[in-house]
Length: 250
Ligand code: 3PY
Image: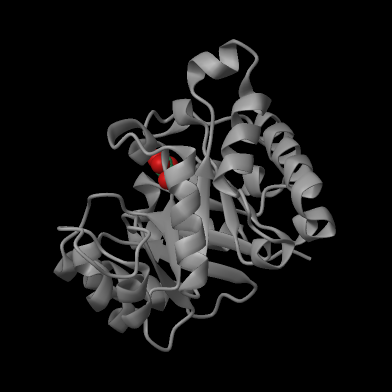
């Protein structure tokens, strides 16, 4: 009943020329794939060309951040209105790198979620525990707080258009992956939180797994009942490896 969403997160990688090259190849590799939503998150400078490169295909484009105001004196920032105007469909929010390096709070991320929805795009809200949280038995609590505060004041109707990406911080860029069973357990806990917030709508919400998902482990992770796709870091940089993950999600 839920459609898998496989989204790349290129992070601070690729010039616009490199982005177009990769997307041209990706389009060719995934053109016959149906039943999976395919998204690539690209840096701001590549977004416009990326959107043009995938026009008419089954690949859509995400931004990796946004500022939660529609315009104004915010030097260096990019608004949801600007992203929407060039054809961006999704915005990745609250990635652990932004929480860590740019000190983004749940409150600020919540403002971004609302601003992205108001502009008619889909937020991909990243949540996840650090290694010390997991070791201290605080995994469920940390994820619950990030979900509840990140989605504060969101209605059930709005929640239908929100994707959650569960990314255990200890599995990001480390090559470590949660076992499929560990990931499933946390996804289920997150869905319970969503149920208590949004009722039956929680069953329609996509919860992606992120954190070193790659062609070798994608099928096993995606086979879990509450894992509805992936947010892919390193393995999304190459068209061939990303396409293999898309295939595993069919
Ligand atoms: C990773 O897999 O490294 C990610 O951070 C995906 O967002």
